[in-house]
Image 1 (cartoon, rainbow, N blue to C red):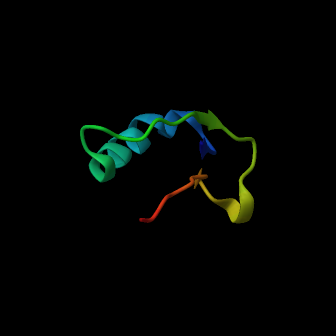
Image 2: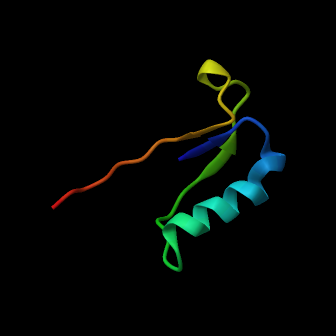
Image 3: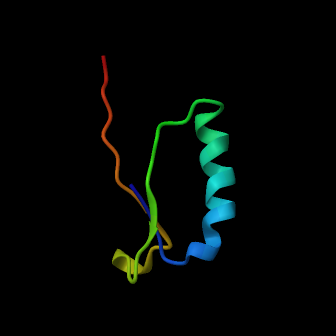
Length: 51
C-alpha cells in the first residue's frame, strides 16, 4: 500500500514507481493519508520474499 500526503502528487509518484519497477510492477493500492509520520510525503508498506 502506498500512502501520499497529497494525492495531487500521484502522477509524479507513479513516474518514479514505474522507473523502479518497469513493465510489470507489483500491484498496489495508493491512498491519500491525512498525516504521515515525521512529516513524510510518501510512505510505502510492502512485503518482500528473498530466495
